[in-house]
Length: 428
Image 1: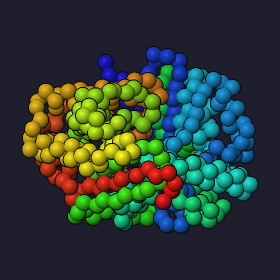
Image 2: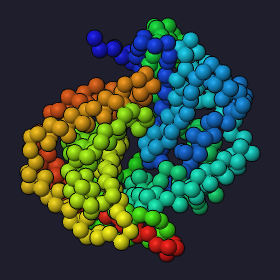
Image 3: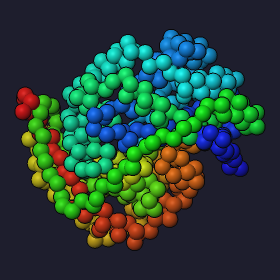
Image 4: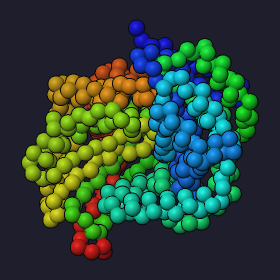
């Protein structure tokens, strides 16, 4: 029998999802805040990620050293992530310790200290992380693609932010951002594991319902207009490989076309791991682009990727070539595969195999308690839990006609950006 999900909302707006899974005596708690780089503007780019770091710097009740000790001494693990649309914190630990992390998350939702010395120390850490990223060719290439793809939407910058903004962001900006977005009405609490829902519901109400909510005064996110022509650019820099990134504008997760996108991704380059956290992997050797490029020695490797986002984002392919390789031959082979699908040169067997592989990848990302709790909150950021429950059914319902229409519209050349990273002995 399917495991029932219990869902309710506290009077202060906190959305809560509970799922009892009694296979092992552990519990996983995730708290999601509807804030990410999408909510940033010029001058504070990178602030969402920085606030995530500062949430580990303590409260009066849980000082900085006590936070980590409180989790590790009971055998638990915890971490956090910041992305385009969200920031999330999780703990997975023995089920009898759930009270600890309920109290911890409620406390740092409202009482994080934002000590100025810790802020300055973390500024150094994050700038060092940015500088490390800037040594990676694919970071440069992807960053340039995002800037080219989004002229008005805040998806145009990296989650980690810019050096200029990271150097300038102040204590008051960080604290005000925390107070604006870290509130019950902007959060989703998801818990899966070995517990009794009725008992935990009472505890959550006792611990979280006293936290006041307040209007967040969030700005309206401008929507990106359609792209009207293909864009192409080249970057030169140090490296030992030549990279081609091809990114098409793609539908958001709550668009019915997203399921066609997921199947197309699997068909062309192998399925993407939407879970973004653990899960298995599937070889892409049966994908069209692998066979057309890697097996024909036109590329060393090929990968693809899609993301579940609130607003339309990108469907990206990365081709890795040996330095000095024939770029035009690789691009021509890539385009031939796109054109074949646009001309309906795809078999029912290929579609079925791509669907099975995408379903398997999705299942791998749902197989343990931590991932179950992940999906409960994650799906509610861009849609709802029904989206997760119906994912495989909707994937299976994608027709050959939908694939054809998607390829002709979404994979049109005027809907894409091509970026080339050319390795040189020294940065140019």
